[in-house]
Length: 305
Image (cartoon, rainbow, N blue to C red):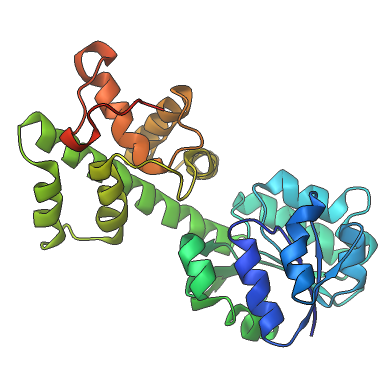
């Protein structure tokens, strides 16, 4: 098929490569031309603007930061709609608000362009290994059309419901995952305060019912004091904004998520926007003794930032 891809970051690059490796033609665009170079060398066509990607494609994939970005790419000057033909398809892999996805789908439908909201979970490693979980909202027939392409990108692909439903599922995913990161941070913080060896506490928990991917990966980062970004905290902060806004819109109480959202606020306020979300541990440490904090033994001597 003739495919397009916009959003060639740490997730987008490997996903685009999988589609290209499957034998499809691929048109790409990025604000920074240098980002396109590796895919161009592999055979992708670099376009001058999103409209050019639309003209070259039957299906376009986007994976960008927020709903405003998807809207600008789609309807801004030189946007996708200036190039996409009737019957073409936009598959948005970004994490945005459910209502934003619904609004975009309605506006595209007015031009006879189909859309799926298909946010992903699994991080850079999942994108590289093509093992992502993909949560899809949209028309079932359109989903069936796109599924063979999505199977090149992920392992668990679920059609959740109508437009916006994929984003609802992704919001729930983020609630659980970041809530678990906060729980791991609190557990290790408590164990340190009680004088236990935090590395051995984590090892013990990993063998019991508390075992999880979050404990394995984020817990290891907390014990090691390694907060170089896997996923930058600012992105989870953005996602929690979506979660809490949707809860407010629906009048749904989310007491745990509200508290985790405040911890993310504190993390960003203390300069941790581009650190890994495991740095939620540092928020707890700063709260000790009026903000001076004491760190896990493995972190002694490391600066907050």
